[in-house]
Image (cartoon, rainbow over all chains, first blue to last red):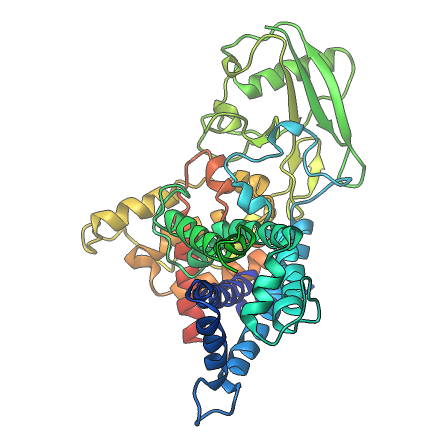
Length: 233
Length: 246
């Protein structure tokens, strides 16, 4: 084993993880704003969806801006997952597990002050990745179309979310996203050097991460539940 | 009081090791945790068994030599070192689990003794300042803002015991490394090597096989000296600056 330069250190991987994570948080906020257009009616949502494709015209071709965003997001996902896998593998080894567990005493296994959100970060991330694939096949590509396929984004939404198990699957996934952001937003900002508090609970970043996680989770859950409950049809 | 201890016994670095149960009939609540282990070792020696190996030195909570995982928590349930933990924390009839620090970079030498040489090598990689030799300079020649002095001192109280690594689910040495970087980086004497320090210490930290930090703060909760979590953000900021300059 050779000593690697600092540019390839665990701390550098954390920077990659933090920046790509925050790019995705920014995207989620924009995506959530778009979703809430469902309350303005079919025309508003379908127009919004169309405008996303004409954004930047005539400087960009049709759909150009959207593809730039998609490439940026794909790069972020790859960077985020790469950093996560590299650190995950390393950390397990670094914890010095003996025969599958670290300490024989079962009494400290939940840690002293770790949050549930931080426990679920890694597997939660895997759940979210699987969900994103399912979600793209469902509402973006429409290859999966419970309730019927359609060229209208509004109709795809309503057709899908009138079915209880579709809403349930999205709800579970968004709770996973919420937990991921609860710890993830705090951790990303701390990694970028923004924390000035001596304790986790005393930091201003802690309520900020709750707010971001809460707004995104609830903001995304409102449209599917409104459709399921018949408020939007 | 009467207690039962389950202790990790491991003959040497190569052997497998297991938890072994011993009973102690007459433990005073005024004993420190290490004195309880001393009593156990007397009992084992009289019975012709091998005593339990553990590290200790000052027994005043200032040297950082002692430290075992008690009931799954480094240094046990109180915020103090193992030597300053007293048996009055426990109750008659308790079963106490005692294990060594567990980390890839801290291999077990024997029983409860681990090799923490990795910490020394992290210090060698940058945890120092270049000071002229000769007579001591006038202390008030270089003014240090009170807030910086206080914070540097707070970080400097790290005794390098390794509880942060033992508590971290990632086996990361970030709190230790960051405490040293904050301690020296906040003071004027630490400025010339500020960039090379963070780069060198982080490179060595990784090289030793410590894990990456996930900012969960388990280290600060286990730290007997209460090293604050923001030292880690200080390391991140120094690292960011050093990398963007390089």
